[in-house]
Picture (cartoon, each protein chain N blue to C red):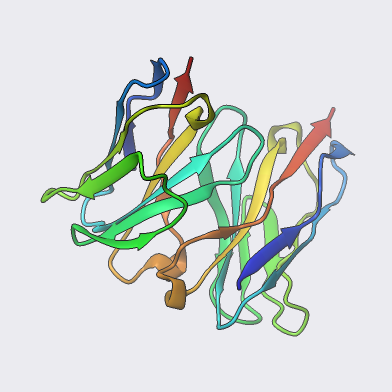
Length: 113
Length: 114
């Protein structure tokens, strides 16, 4: 079945550091890939998405590229801020499963000033 | 812009009581999904509806039921509550056939069973 694996947290970085959160997936078809962010005490927000191979999703300085050959969708940001501290979830959905989101376990990101 | 509205935001119930969570999707969104997120966990899919019909079922306990009404809002009914039901319950909605682009989540209802 479909699954998403992302790096375990917490990930602790200093402000202005470069961020990478790894995400790999297994899927039977051609999924869409997503990164969702959950700030402390808040709901899930769609951060970025990519719907086909080689698409790059980007938002708020974050980027992720849909790599079919490596089945990956790593999240990157060039210079993180304290306000980026949150839990980041990688997820996929497919038409064959009625677009249910399959989630990674989440990676807690802590940015220190 | 209108978002997905969930009510109540917080709910405290005792064991064996019942609870009803409500979800109002974004206007014109006819697909609704319910997820449960335990502390420190990733969200778990419970159930989804498309055009007022149940379209998919996940790990929803038999004690829970849900429906989507003619105005597309949805309600999650939870009976015989257990301590383990304490969690954040999220509702999400999408446009018809637009699930491929992701969906919009509400802020969630935090249910605490004591």
